Amino acid sequence: MTSTSTPPGLTRFNTLEEHAAHAALHEVCAATAWAKRLLAARPYATCEDLYAASDAAMAGLTAADLDEAMAGHPPIGRPRPGDPTSAREQRGMAGASDALKAEMLELNLAYQEKFGHVFLICATGRTGEQMRDAVRERIGNTPEQEREIVRTELGKINRIRLARLVEEEA
Picture 1 (cartoon, rainbow, N blue to C red):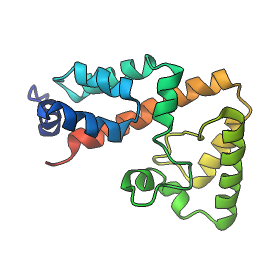
Picture 2 (cartoon, rainbow, N blue to C red):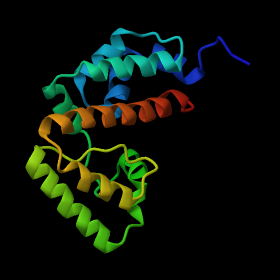
Picture 3 (tube, rainbow, N blue to C red):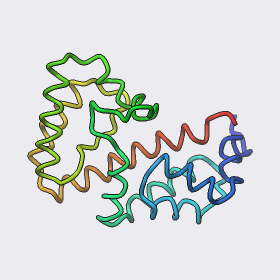
């Protein structure tokens, strides 16, 4: 059965005052341009409309916008203290061995040295080993290849975070 009514969480998001909606979006993605594009398109009739707007906004981000978005993400294996979102998303590293954590730190530093930003991957549902294997594979990319992979990974993260935002109870 298909419902034509807007889900309560999406209705709540649609009706938030602009500053509150901007703050909520900033928790999803630190890129100001992305948030502004999503705010400008409110109200959304469906969650899919919101996700599509997010994807379109992500596709239009400049290199500087992507840098701003990446700055909002801690390195894999080191979620920010007191940040339940990054801890939840990086759960796959929580039970990793000390050796794997040390290897990830080393790989993160090598990646950051090469590309000038944190290694970014949609970590939700991935094991520590899968994240390690991904950074090992991606460190061989060109900066241009990696920039587009990061854009795709950010898009995945944003969709997951937006879904949580519009599905949460008030």
